[in-house]
Image (cartoon, rainbow, N blue to C red; front, side, top):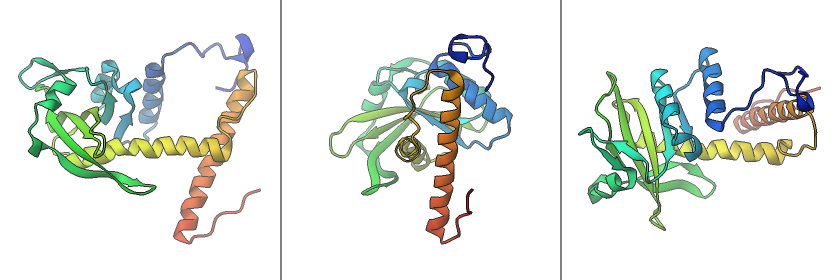
Length: 222
């Protein structure tokens, strides 16, 4: 939206207050409705603990691996409820596998991973799991709720969970290289223009970096 509107600081009238979860759902809906290919969705705990957002993704049949709280109540395969940390604590030692969540600055990001099926009302060919990631040094455990094709491997879930690091690195690069967070503006139009141009600049830099790594020429700009 780029209109000046009649609200304070030029905020368009159509722009209303929305929570982070509501904004996430709206952005996802726009992407899906526009036909953007989506394999999986991954989110941090601020979004992942929203059961309504998870159900909405399932209705759109979009696979997800989203972080959640350790005390999040899970529906078990016996239709009972149990805290996420208690479900994982009950797993035998052999349930844990050492897997890489992807490449890091100092090599593969390796953790211990385990999962347990949850819920029984699965759609045909789909499954639900509680995924756990345990640090190899501190033993700290992170928890994820997952939905996707029934034959999804533990390795697949681990790598999807690890994709969040790449997303966070993307935002950090946009701040460092394209000034995404370096604005001093007081109205909507100026803020919108700055964010849009910064993201466009970062997109160009990302493409240029990829082409350079492949040895391909980088298109000239004017």
